[in-house]
Length: 581
Image 1: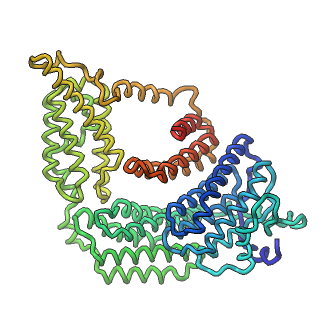
Image 2 (image 1 turned 120 degrees about the vertical axis):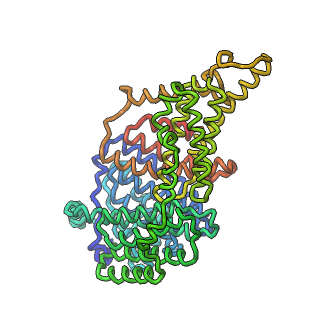
C-alpha cells in the first residue's frame, strides 16, 4: 500500500477479525451466503449504473450490503463487515436525501463490491488471513458521506470499480511483508480502544448510528403531501425513540427538543387538529437540528452543540407552541374520556371471556354487546377511527354468539376471541401513546378470521333449518368443531397449532446458542421480519408485483442462512419451505 495511504489512515482503526477461529460449518454457510449475494449484486449494478434514479434497485443494493455487514460481523469477518457498512451508510444517506447520488458514490459501491468479491471472498473460502488494509476504503466512504472531495490518493481507489475484475489482481491495498507487523499492531489497537469505552460512549455511538433511520422516517412523513397518507404513528414513534434513546445516551438537548415536538404532535393527533404549514416548518427545523447535532457528535466537535440547540430553541419560541397549565387543564385526553365510559367488561374481556362466556350466558355476552355499542357511539372520530371499526366487528361477533350459542362449544372460538380481545387492548394502548389507531394487516386478519368463523356457522345453521323445516335448537345444530370456513378446517388447524406449540418444548429444540452470534442474528432478524412484513403486504395487494415477491424470497433466504448459522434448525427449515414455495 502506498505510503500516502498509510499516512491518511494513521488514525483510522478497525476491529480485529476472528473468522479464522470460527466453526468451519458456520464459515461455509457464510461463504455460500455471500456467493449468492454476489450473483444478485452483479445483476443489479449494470442497470443501476445506467439508471441511478431507480429507487427499488438502490434499496435492494443497500439491503445486500446490509446483509454483507451483518453476516461478516456474525462470523468474525469484522473488517469486511465495516467496509460493507461504509457502503450501506452512504446509501442510507442517499435515501434520506442528506447527500446526492453521484457517479462517485456509485463507483465507490462498485469498488467495494469488487474488493469483497475478488480479494476478500477467496480468503474466506480457503480460510486464509486477509492481507489487505481496508481502512482506506472506510475513509473514502466517510469523506463521501460528508460531501467532501476525496483525497486524491483515496479517489484513485475508485478505479477498482472498473479494473478489479478477477481474483488474483492487485488492489493497491495489499500489506507488504515488511508491513505485516506494523499492520498487526494497528489492528490490535482497536479492541483496546473499544474496551476502555464507557457505557455512555457506547450508547452515544449506537444513538448516532440509529438516528439516521429515524430522520429518514421524518423525511418520509414530510415528503407525503396527502394528509390521509401521512403515517402519524411512524412519525411519533421515530420522535419518541429519539427522545428515549437520547435520554439513555445522556444527550440532554436532543431529549428536551424531542420531548417538546413529541408532545406537540401527540396533542394534534388526539385533539384531531390538522397540522398546518407552521407545524410542518417546525418539524423541518427539528429534523435539521437532529441531523446537525448528530453530525457534530460524530465529528467530536462538541463546542458547537450549544449553538445548534439555541437555534432550535429560538425557532420553538417563535412559533409559540409552549403548553400552558391552563391549556393542560382544558384538554382532556381522548383515552381518559373513553375509559370513563361504562365499558369495564369490555376492557376486562381479555381475561374474563373464557370463564364467563358459557357460565353467565347470555347475560355476559349481551353486556359485552351493549358496552361495544356505547363505545361505538363515542369513537366516531378521526383519532379513534381504528377503534371504532374494530369495535363494530367485535360487536357483530358478540351478536352472532347470541344468535348461535353452539359457537361456544368450539375451542377455536375462544382462541379467536382471545386474539381479538388482546388486539382490542393493544389499540387502546396505541391511542394512549398518542398514536393514531390504524388496523394493520395482522389486525384485519384477526377480524376476518373471526367474522368468517361466525358467519359460516350461521350460514350452515340457516341451511339446516331450511332443510328440516322445523325450528332449530341447540341440540339439532352441528357442533362448531365440525364446521369449516371455505376450504379451511379451523378445528383441525387449531389442533395443529397446539401441537406445534408443544414442539417448542421438545428435546429436539436447540437452546444452546452462542450468545454473541444469537445477538447478531436477532438484530438481523428484526430487520428481515420488518422487510418481510412490508413486502408481503405489498404483494398481497398487488400480486403481479414481482419486485416484492423477489424481495420476499431474498429476505427468507437471508433468514434461513442466519438461522442455520446459529443452528436454529426449525426457523431455517420454515424459511426454506416458504422460500421454496
